[in-house]
Length: 86
Image 1 (cartoon, helix red, strand yellow):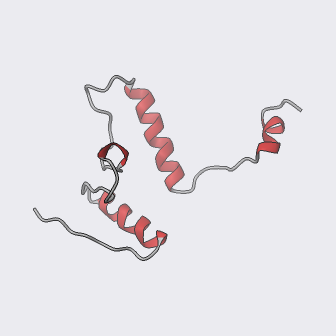
Image 2 (image 1 turned 90 degrees about the horizontal axis):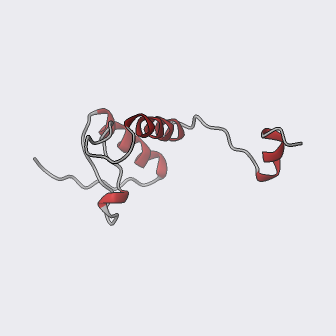
């Protein structure tokens, strides 16, 4: 096994590199970040996790949707309307 250091020059390159590593199931970490805050390729919750596995799966699915840009931004001033409070 070897360690590679890459130097993406912009966010687009960084996102593409992460996508390739995830697709190939290659673990990676961002330099200078604690392991607890680093992205991993782990796709399912740990068996010894104190969290409900169904809940963890929903959170992971939501995280992937956000990474793909599959979300809707709502302005604070529009929250009442969105929630039917107007």
